[in-house]
Image (cartoon, rainbow, N blue to C red):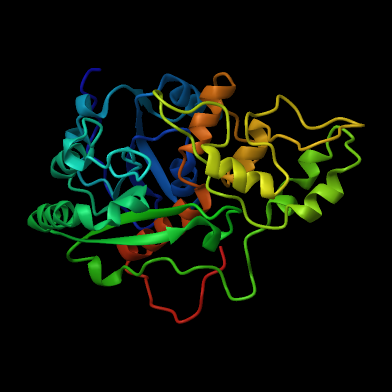
Length: 337
């Protein structure tokens, strides 16, 4: 991929804030950024199906298909935010947790891009395993390198269900703010007491009933918990199913057959345990129903299962926006998105 550049970006409080996104995937983080008032100058993504998804839904977006290692941010000086969902396998408990020894570790590339464009803020998402003791030195090194460039970095463990997404989905968001703005940043606070994420049944009952299945309401009453974390898998492992044995057992307890995905919702007379469709998994992940996914069933599910839920991305991005504008304030109340 050729190095990409554009004109230097000017920042104005009266305009939307600017951002560039790496490892964009199917657009979960991009949607959250968009909904928080950020306008992306570029979305960099390696997977062709994910790139097609981004172009399908937002034809005007500048989608750059290729390896982030070949991408240059030098043409994006003074961008407000550099964001990305850098690959999780180097830190995932499901893998070997090789960290910096894993060829898929793209934190060094993110640091290179920070040096090139000097954004006001950085937002990087990863798995909860990033906080494991085995990576203490790695985290400290990352914080030290960001500090040398003038940023104050912190990491925040977040559960998607705390922000209205109907699955637990524990994740870590690394936020680094330029030192002169860092005092304005406060992490997002979960939903107000008494407001909870919807259950699987509440989230999917209309889709389960869409082909006339008489058992949809009874199924929804049984599926009365939030979803287990969706597992997208990698290109080497995982397919159009809901994960390994333990994950499938958790789905089965909610009345869902997780061995594969269905092409459509159950029809009249269906008996047994229903499977989820691509649209159902997308809703579980917090995507709006109008968001379409390119590629076959396996490719589409991998995009969904590996996505950053848009409502969580929005919650973090709004706090970053407030910090950049200098309008942040600490609140003892919990937020409602």
